[in-house]
Length: 386
Image (tube, rainbow, N blue to C red; front, side, top):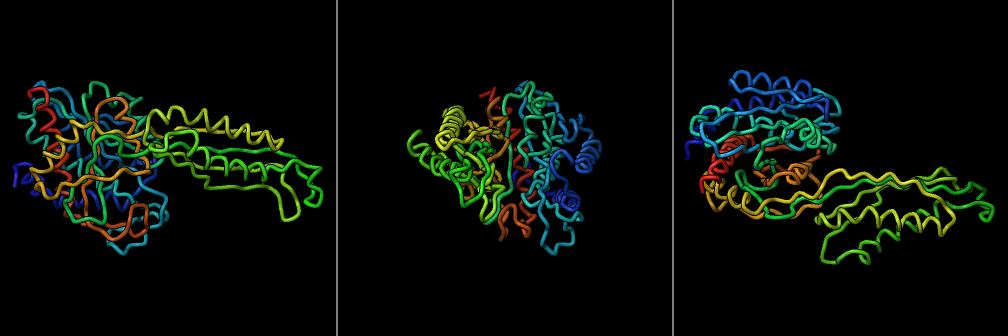
């Protein structure tokens, strides 16, 4: 057992207690006021200076003795609008709100790492920035952290996400693109309402909308490189008509995902052209609300390699595995668009996936995550000495 592992193990019960307190009091994005208070109280007890972000979240800093630059460690802290279905004694006290993605564990693990790093700060070759980020689930928190100076002076950044379905202590990572970009669109197709028995007297937005749905599927295969993953999903299609009335308008909503930053930059323009021209072919007009929620998360190769070696010290080489590309999104991508970064998963058993009302983890994984956060910081601050 390494020195950092020993320090993490000594406070394992406290880390679990912090996790349970946060789990019982889940809060949605930009509403994490109580969670922020918990974190602030813990940092004050540790003697670590911090500043609160607006409206929620915290950035703290541990100054080491060396001059190896600044490394940031990020944990997200928001919950989800999901009803908890577990029978745990520490289950959510709030109806319809739950930490179903493990952000309670991330906050607790980073607080554990903060304690470790504060104890050894005289041996740190640089500065450690601790970012307790709000609103990851609504893809707005990272941008707010950056806007409020959270990355100023940072040379590199690491994040850990708890994982389920794999043995406790398994550490997953992947070089290059790891999480997809996420764009959201809302298309309003406007036609002319009429009786269904006399369609020639109106302009049918449902017909135009159906053509748009089909065109969007060919769009991925004929406009972009087939070797670059691109997903276009229309998840909602609603009109104001009825069984015998052709509607006056229809609304389509969906998402676009890709691993390529180049495609991400191009896709909105192509999307707008296809939608507008398809609707025009059916004599309809369109209104498009297109929003880029997150960029592609690209892990830095050097930092992934450094992180794997750090993890080997704690859990052994046999527990380190390649992760998988994931079409889901993660707003840690906003940081990696500014500074080199690496995103890791620490597995914690469990039988239910993220965003499930019965989401669960083995809490023995929390001390591993705390030690790994700390090891990332210690090892990466040696980069300037290599």
